[in-house]
Image 1 (cartoon, rainbow, N blue to C red):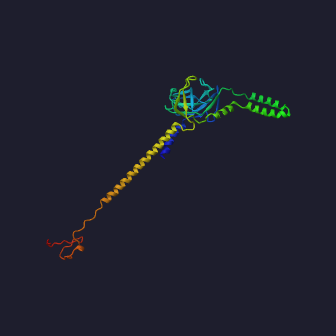
Image 2 (cartoon, rainbow, N blue to C red):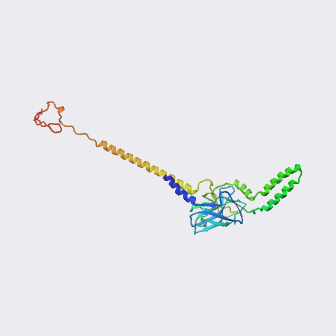
Image 3 (tube, one colour):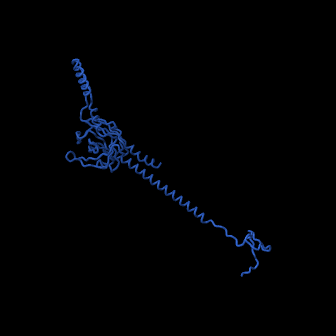
Length: 296
């Protein structure tokens, strides 16, 4: 019961601190668009930065500081998608990372509270126009119908394939590419940092832990709970041992205090000469021999 209580009080702050948007569906955002970012936190002083996840996974590069406040908590903000100095050719996978404190603690997971958003993709390709896709599809379909009976089947198949390719949106292509990348609810930052590549960028890189692992707060809560359970068990064993020892000592004292009454010096059954009628009889059944006794 104690363990459950400790685990509950540990996980409640983790649930109350999280990003709601971007969602877990690996959204595709375009440069220049305005997006609403939503999150929950009880912190008052914190910063939110854009991080670029490495294609191979395991590390991320710090980007621009998007939010810096000392009058929180806040719940949302609107952001015009802009990478600033980050290179989109290096990776199209990004996430937001909130750190308690000023912007100097970004990437330092051991200083204060921190939590991150889900991954999302960013592209610089313009959004396709629906009218141009329909026009292209109509032209290719008309060409295939005008072909001969033998070649029309082949042309029709080719046209259908081209139509599918023409109507395929960059969102689908980006999603296909994103499936190759590691997915996670939260990147789950670790305390290990890397120095950035001096030849490409001066911004620091940090190593991002396995997305499926527990966060630092949850691991700490479980560790504290297990420790308290162990201490409780040890205390219970000591109290039970003390109780048994005290009970055994009480029983030993009772046995040691048991005494037998002193046997009389004279009794009727042990007398050789019989009872003297003139001797006074004591109340307990003993008599006193008042005659002089001759000693040899």
